[in-house]
Length: 452
Image (cartoon, rainbow, N blue to C red):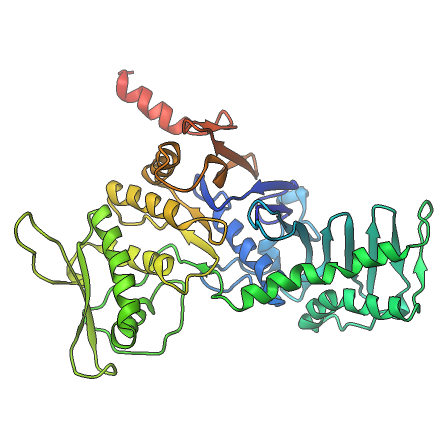
């Protein structure tokens, strides 16, 4: 994804587009919609690539019911009837791929938001499905030569409460169209100004079903996007082996490390080296190890870390006996450095409980990991992390170029929030910043220099 468009979603009333990059940092005051923005990205992913109705209450996000999700200005402002969201993919993020745009309109059934319309566009061709209350869906499509709408009887009925049908119908429309086209058994409503579609028009529309299918197949073979909780799990002195089930708080990470230790020595050696490299850069630990408390992998174990002195190695320390920041960052860096790492990360405040020097090291790690095949979207309140990213890009300490980093500044404007897409130049300067960006920090600096 290289941009997100949204309208009437929570605190975002106006239609606006936020530009993403391999590494995107979300900054701004509290309660300006940064977490909601990440929840929306995952919801769009679920629809487009998993072909599932998104759950806006799935951990680590809980956006509530439809009434809490759709934009509401209060009092006479009223509540919007629908909200819209979409994303664009271009070859800038997928060098071997094709550009396309996918948009969804959400309405209400019961207390939950569900898709009431979807649109897919690519290279001048587009197809749109609107689900109607009379249990039919209306299908329109177009090319640069014109736009057409299918007559309703040719589209199967869809129960309003059959959520999965809405998704399956949308992604089967191109195939259904192809069947009608092959049989030349299709009746269209042709708006004034449009001529009848040609074989070239039909060929362009037929290609639409391949656009998302390719990415859907690819992403279904991978690990799902990793969405971290703002606070990770508490460390334990002793862990009992359990099933490996990924979770937002990283409860599974110690078991994952132990499983690597017992069953994949080569994989464990590679991951351990990567973790220790970061640990040294961040000043957190020089060595990490698994201490079995028995002879079998089914018996309890401990996670230990160690710091080195100038001449001697320090003692092994249990994870609960070192700074809380170590256990808080361990799930994040393990996910980032594991060989099963997903192609999309949604990280909430990964710097929590870390010293500024460790926060900066985390910024360097993000620069090392992010790229065309791995996209990181990070909510942060750390200037140290942001500045390290800026300097690493400027000093060419990373493969990332200035255009590979986006900073989204969420600014409250009255009762709404506006997203500003900022970028870096080759000197590391922030471009396109609004007047309010960093105003608080400048006022604090001014106060520290001159007594009132």
